Image (cartoon, rainbow, N blue to C red; front, side):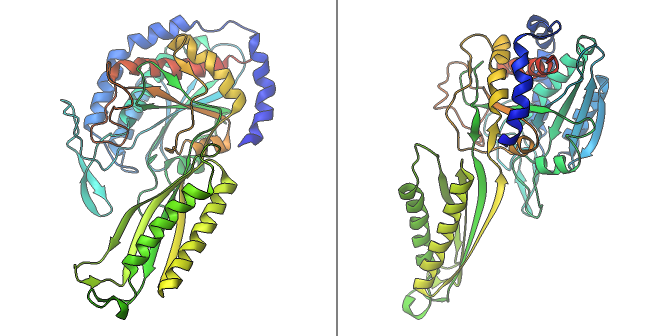
Length: 435
């Protein structure tokens, strides 16, 4: 990921003295405010009609239709249900290419916001019919990027170069049975090629003061691994545990050991690490010790070598626990998202750009890392990029007590949507204005 920094740094150092006129931030602000009502309308439509990962058929059609109406070139079916829009400036100047990204998928969550446009949709997840809701703000992401596309399409005679709009499916991870999630699949299908993208920017609404923008250089959001453990013993009567092999007892020891490994062998002040066992499934009757127990969990890390070492030690420890009881263990790890690594030079360059539209005191480019994950990281593995957060808590509500992303009560303060349109649009314009 750092390999791209040196080449980008040389170009970014020239930005202090641009060779040609910059688009005024005021023009972007005025244009964004002009589409604000439409962006809110789009967000509400998307919120009421959510779709799960790789099932975003109607969402993708909605996006493609609006992009075409803006005069933007459209490629559909990129990464299964992904959409790519290409806007070519007609002004004179450098011919850089920059990308802006939004994710489209919803979650298997029963919405409890009470909004008049709350979701009543259902979908299929793991073979079951489940409620579906935009409990992570992706409806807002799509609406803001569409708003930026409309702003920028109306300014194409004021910039040179090309802007690529990436509307990505399946950010929440590969659905069961799928080999990869949306970002990887879009990259595989050429989302960053033809035209070849030089840098990419993305944002995410999260609990935070309305109007605030925050991120950090280098490791910002954790790498995420799914962990699956299967324990096999020997079934027996609950009254005679010694006549079988008690996998429930083994599972208890495994959970305790995983928690201890994380808490007692890693310095949390240097590399935050979370290893959570979140599901335990075993047995069907109160007085039968079952033959098998399965567990699953998540591992969040910021250091690749440390992650690999922890996985190695956890697998060895679990094997030893199972062996002590006479059981066997199978241990599997699958990455859901790589580390969100914000290019250092691009991160430093972006702060004053964001301040132009967010205002002084509203941009924090040195926020602490967060253990939630994002597959935007895979785009950053290919090209330099910066991912930032947009505070979207309701007015007068303490962000610390606001419903978090993935909660049934999660909602987005619609007053901040226009700021997301502005940050998207100006970051693209300023990048294209590089000498």
